[in-house]
Length: 231
Image (cartoon, rainbow, N blue to C red; front, side, top):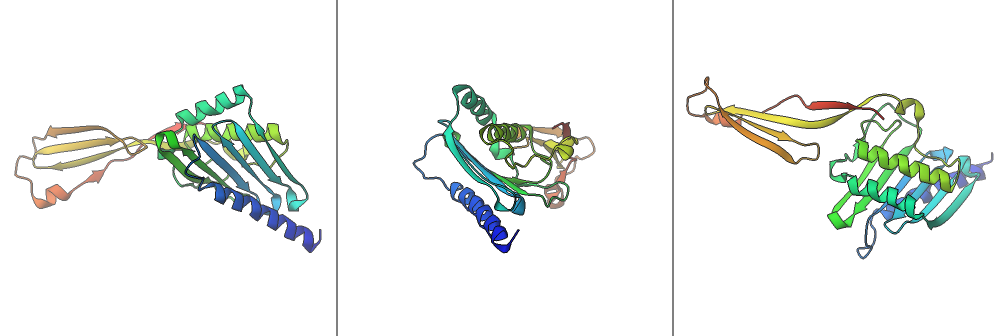
């Protein structure tokens, strides 16, 4: 393919990226939840998908080396919208990381910009091949987005990477922070989203002397509680 074909591929891919960037700052008057999914496979093409609370969607795709370019907009059926509404309602974007790293991935860059104004929740998160370490609520939403894109425009580029997604991933289920001093052991359990689950203060027989400044400053972070989740 000539230089013009390569240039077209780059221009169209950049257009997808820029359209997703614009969507990262929606108008303040925009009601309800909405999100934008974008995957950029460089010369391999890319896809942008937008959906709002009313079921209005927009898909834009670029094929390999820019050989194909498609756009489609419409409205989800009542059943399709209900499925997404459930996923959005149970999503916990406050617990999502900004980036998820996994195996070296040069195949694409994927990003989801999520906003749920009713609860004041929003997040922009990036991930690599195989959904490395993503929590289940985010994984479920991404799977639903892929399926909707495939139904809208078959054989469209997404972030799907079946071989790596079959691997077991580990995500944090919480942390425990413990501190001793002044004859007491204080423990705090923290949920993955940063919320305090519980606090305890127990006397210790081995520490009856008055707490020193050193005692008060000692804090040890216990090993993170981890739980395995399958894709």
